[in-house]
Image 1 (cartoon, helix red, strand yellow):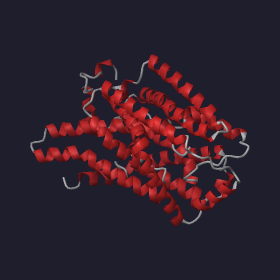
Image 2 (cartoon, helix red, strand yellow; image 1 turned 120 degrees about the vertical axis):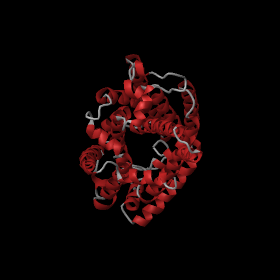
Image 3 (cartoon, rainbow, N blue to C red; image 1 turned 60 degrees about the horizontal axis):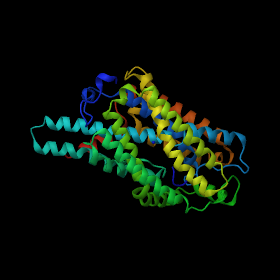
Image 4 (cartoon, one colour; image 1 turned 45 degrees about the horizontal axis):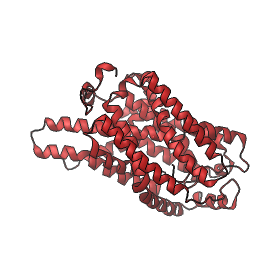
Amino acid sequence: MLINRKIDQSLAPSNDNGFSRHQTLLTHGRIANLDAIRGFALLGILFLNIYFMANNFYGYAPHLPEIASDLTIEIVSNFLLEGRFISLFSMLFGAGLWLQYQKTTSLDSKSDSESESEHGKNRITRRLYLLIGLGAIHGVFLFSGDILLSYGLCGLVVCRYFTLGPKQLLAKSAKFMLIAMAVIALISITLEDEQFYRGSDYFIEQLALWTGSYADQVVMQAYMIGYMLLIIPISILWYGASLMLIGMTLMKQGYFERGFSHKQLGLFACIGIAFASIDSLLSLSDSAVLKEVSGIFMMLGAIPTALIYWHIIVKVCQNNPLKLTLLQNIGRLSLSFYILQSLLGVLLLRHWMPQWQMEFDRIDYMLLAIVLGLLQLFLAAVYLRFFSQGPLEYLMTKLTRRGQ
């Protein structure tokens, strides 16, 4: 789809702004639960991005007629994968922004210098601008399925609402989501379907582009990033900001520690299954418009499923740095390993083994994603034996603090 690419009671918030005793975690190392969730989300994103690392515009080229294994994986993906990890990652980004804000304001309150205090408050904004720049470079020169650019822009919007209480944040999130869905629906009904399937003339044309000259790929990706910059302010900005506000609410209310109640989980499961079922029915339609509209149900259904994943990891990890350590490693290096994913996927599928685009079915792409995921788990574990911070994490920290 072109447009549709989500403590226990003693630590409950003490006031409407959501400030609670979990603030102590901000000054005592990392939060294991969040690192584990972030690592899980990053590995999960690979299972969707892997198609677009081959053909950056259309992704997977289906057979005509579609084969049984492809249909099976597509339906499973509609229920468990599609949009789930990006939603989870977006909510984590919002949660992380609020944690940075808490840490910054805590440091500022101890500062004797008004100038130092002002620098601290600007640190988050400076980091977001750096993320936008990194995203643009990543999108043009490596993989235009980039999320950093849109995250940076969404983050600039979300920063305005740090002081709102949980109820106000959810109300604002719902408003943003409504705007995003309305715009995406309007865009969806104006799209024309291209005959893109395995062996079609258009597939051969696209294959030649994405396995050909790197210069041609850069030009195409620059065009796609330019298009995204037009789309982000009217749709993706509101959708991403809505998810980030949900993440901020989860942090303020302590869900990063205690998870959700059985009643909440049951509601999430019902909503997720209902929307995923509608998504599957529409996506298997012969109508190009219905296929695009299915993306709306995918995006909405992804949120409750992502929250279930959030809960499971919280309960398993229990904020213990010795549990789910492999996932926590990836979470600590998420920025560097996000770029590494793109580099490995693009090199393999476009430059080293371009014939795989002709040979691979969905199951092959899934197996490749598993292999690359295991490789990342191994590399992260080895890397953190020698270093405490990823190279891009280190660079971002240095640039953010530059001049202070």
